[in-house]
Amino acid sequence: MSYPINVRVISKSEVESLVTPEDVIEAVDETFKAMGNGQIYHPVKEPMWMGKENANMLLAMPAHVKDKKIVGVKWVNMFTFQEEGIPSSYGNILLLSREENGQPYAVIEATSITTMRTAGGHGVVAAKYLAKKSSEVLAVVGCGAEGLSGIRGFLAAFPGLKKLRVCDKNHMALENVKKEFKDRIQIEAFTDAKEAVEPADIVLLVTTARKPVVMFEWLKKGAFVSGLYSFNDLDPECSRKADKWYLGSKDTDYHQIIKAPRLADYHLSMDNVKGDLGEVAAGRCAGRENDNEIIIYTHMGMGALDIAVGDLVYRRAVEQNVGKIIDLA
Image (cartoon, rainbow, N blue to C red):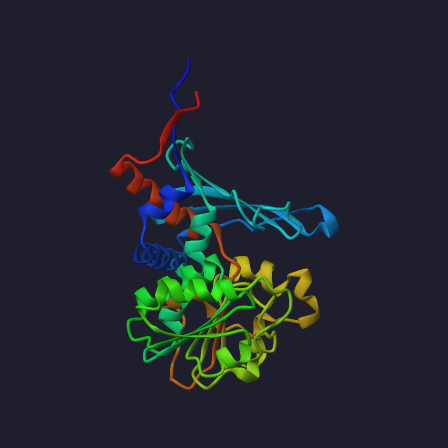
């Protein structure tokens, strides 16, 4: 006997048309609250390294958001040595399955979801809990697709922002920022990270650098730093010298940050971690307690964020009859 396996396939352009920055921020915030209340299961991610210098990676990111009955896995690639013409991380997919019977119901292009839920998702949600409410100056170091997504998210969540200071070595990337946001906020562009960061209340760090490009000494009192690639591009001394350091998830970041072989020389320690964003969002750990604290947040992402946003994309697709239905039976 054959049973139908109807799967909705949703493309990158369709994903981007179905959700707004505000939608993503809300979904990510709810996911961290669920994590803080013990409603997230995410096994430790185990990358498969391959290629030249073992610098290319394929990674499965499974998760179960129990309170919303969402189960899925993201299959993502990160290739340092990529074929010409293909971005270093592209063509990623998200598979969602039904909790009650394990049957797949959606296959969604996930590069766009990753971009939205990272800088424009948990980077913004962390700032909602850990940055000063009076923050007026945002510095963004790294102005590629994720940097742009982060700016969209911050402008949606922080209406009090007055200045945007952007830094990138690529002048075209800086021009792209000006083109999209020039009518929404005052913009200053830099190729020197120190110059961009020093006056900032909020620093969003989203580069592909493999060595620190932002140092602790550049941060002013009360600054909040959202380090989306942990200490790949952020001064590791921030973990010890900042007033508080938070992880996105103690469970996943312990392995990807604290025990990461590439960061072994920095001797990062859980002793310096105040808590994680799930604990803060759920009210189980104190966040910012005064406007003078320098607070650091680092997180390497988790599949629960992808499947939460992906399920929202799926539900919108059903409502608007977007995507293609394929019977796998």
